[in-house]
Length: 82
View 1 (cartoon, one colour):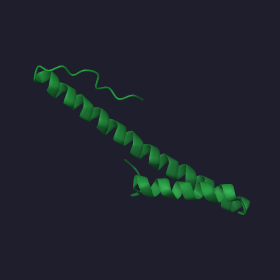
View 2 (cartoon, helix red, strand yellow; view 1 turned 90 degrees about the horizontal axis):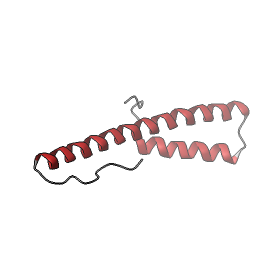
View 3 (cartoon, helix red, strand yellow; view 1 turned 30 degrees about the vertical axis):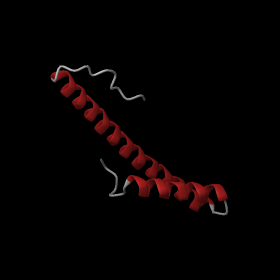
View 4 (spheres, one colour; view 1 turned 45 degrees about the vertical axis):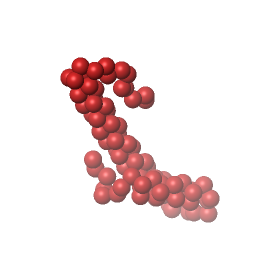
């Protein structure tokens, strides 16, 4: 996961700050462009984290289902809603 060593919460909080600054106005065109570019980068980082979490959850649910099936139990519907 290429996250530039930024955690999800840190990226999310910084992204929210970038959005606030852009929405409040008062920045030059160059500053606005730099903020927008940083926001895009932070949004990608957040998405990478969320994608990684989704994969881990899917793997955990699948493993749990396999264990239940191997034990002879009913696994039911363990799928995650997307």
